[in-house]
Image 1 (cartoon, rainbow, N blue to C red):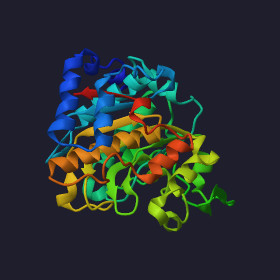
Image 2: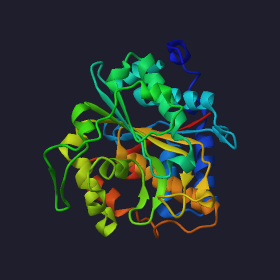
Image 3: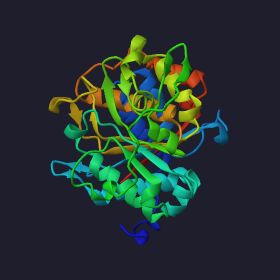
Image 4: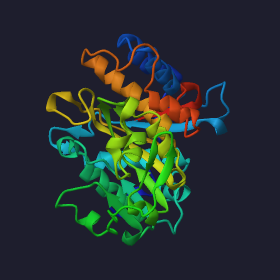
Length: 343
């Protein structure tokens, strides 16, 4: 993909939708599907269509861009043209610019060494990682970052020639352990030492211990040496404490929650009957806000399949509440500026 492919995205469709359109969307998601209170609040956040809540100053809100396309995923796989368009529009909207290279430069520094952190659990079954990895690497290179400035973690496939040309991620472990708090201590992967910026690209899935897995858990349990030690009590407060640690939190620049295919039941591994082709990407600098919206999407999908919400009433996963309390991000819909972009 040449830089000209990304220079000027098509008009931002979310900005041309009327408030009535957003109200209709929220009503269909919350009322017709009989969603729980937590999901209704998140649907109400989308109604803003890019406007800050009247109770929240714009500067205090966490922005989440929800980019959706019914044609993004089909029986033939991921549509690369629509995936590229989804990334361009999401990045440009997040960074308030019309040029995707400018968006990257508002998120990253020119001298950054960038670690792209994917998730290998259920990746082969879901089949959406290789095209997303390719588009992200191409986009970064088109914006000026050299292959040796990019490391890709947890992406397989013999056909990923572009990814193999990037800098190999160091899979050894750091020499010193980091103390996370009451959860204990552990070593991070050595690639984190060498990176100055992390782009987090998790799947959206249910999880039998943590309720859900998304941005936060992909970081907390995907970059440490002994993840099995940190699964007690619904992974709480372990997830929040690990993500809050300085080596990780100081490097996190962007979250791209891959909801092209969603594991809505029985996760984190996936059976064919537990996968829903949602055709969505969520982009945010705030992993808590991204997961909070993702939790609502999981419940939306479960309602479509006749399943109960993951948690009763307005409850959210414990680790999300802990992460919000620790100041990692916002889980309250009134503090999340969510914008829907339909392609």
